[in-house]
Image: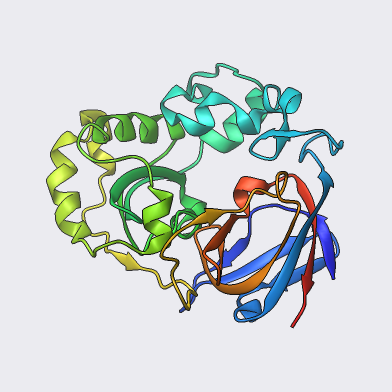
Length: 264
């Protein structure tokens, strides 16, 4: 039996993708649990910042921490609001400079439909794996988060910027020619970003460890259903997929302390 506070699974680019659940005293290769019956039990909350047993509000933080820590500021979700390149502080300028003033990638990914997104360069391809994208391509590489943000804002007028998680988990998807999409959207990239356009980027294809995709979806909420048991049939994005069509979003439950038991 394993116990600890949930944080998003660590991933490794392989064929198929390898998933690891890191707990305080354990490191579980989740791929090895496929076809095994496992039990998950909710124990308590533990805010990822203050570590107190307080209800999780968003992103693994209690409500007070969510509105205080720089990791949850608005610019994280809306990169066009980044101001560190101007020397303007939001919550913690030192943290914001480290996070914002580094190379960022604007990309196209196909997880439910083709979407545009932004990530730090050092998070490629982790970001695509976390979104459950089966194919992705880089558009531009810019020196800060702000330039990536204004590019995303310009492009999402012409392509989606969100993933339909239900479509992604059911695998109701089709392959797209992302090179063609990239060429089509090039005209909408802001003029100041065009020098950073990646002319020769190529599409990356990703294969997830899923034995059976669910036909219907039942989302597991451990605070409402504190104990669950099922046979693990797949892992995609940050979701565990079980035999009875139950899906569990590990990242969406960050800050929950759980026990995980391998029954057979």
